[in-house]
Length: 276
Image 1 (cartoon, rainbow, N blue to C red):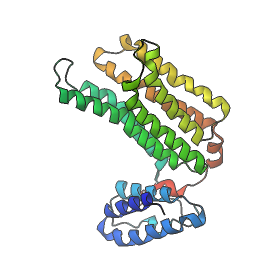
Image 2 (image 1 turned 180 degrees about the vertical axis):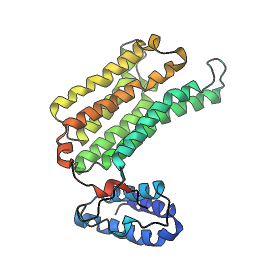
Image 3 (image 1 turned 45 degrees about the vertical axis):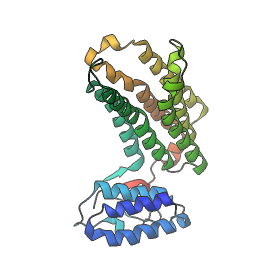
Image 4 (image 1 turned 60 degrees about the vertical axis):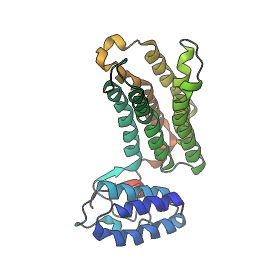
C-alpha cells in the first residue's frame, strides 16, 4: 500500500456521507492491503474509491461497495451505470484544453492590462493548456488496465515531463523564426504522445501519428486558420495542437493490442458505482 493510495482513500472517506465513513474506512483500507494478493492495483482501487465518493454523495441507498473490492472483477455484480476512470480523466484533460481559448478571451485587451493581469493570464494558460491535462493524462496512464507496470510508469513520466517542458520551453527555445519557432510548442506534444504510445504498447505504424500534432502546430503557427474564424475567437485556435495529440492518441488506441486484450472485460477497480 503506497502513501498515495492511503491519501486518496483517506480523502475519499472524508468526503463520503457521514453514515458511510466508518464502514468505508475499514473496507477500503482492507482492500488496499489485500490488493496485491489478487493482482489488482492499489492506486486504481484508491482512485475508484475517490471518484465514487466525489460523484455519488447520496448515502441513504444501498451501495455495491459492500462487496469487497479484492474479489475478482467477474465475481462482483455488474453495476448498471458506471463511469470509467480513465475516460473520465481524458475528458478532464480535453475540457481543460478547450477552456484555454475562452480564458484568453476574458483577459484584458493588450495594452490595457497590468503586470498582475499578464501574470494571471499566462498562469491560467499554463494550467489549462499544459499542467492540468498533463496531470490528468499521467494519472490515466497509471490506471490503464492490462498495461505493463513498467510501460505505465514510463508513459506517465514522459507525459508529466512534457507538461512541465511546455511551460519551460518558451523561455529556453530558439529565437529563430518560423518554422524553427514552433519547436518549443511541438516538442512537448510529441513527448506526451510518445508517452501514451509507450504505455499502450502501440504498434510501429501507430508512431506515424506523431505527424498529426506536428502538422497542427505548424498550421497554428502559420495562422492558416485565422481568416476562417471570427477575430474574437482566434485565441481558441491555441487548443488545436493539444487536441491533435488527443486525436492521435485515440487513433493509436484503436490499433493497440492492449485494447484488444481488455475489450469486453469488466474492470471493476476503475469504475465509479452510480448505485450509491
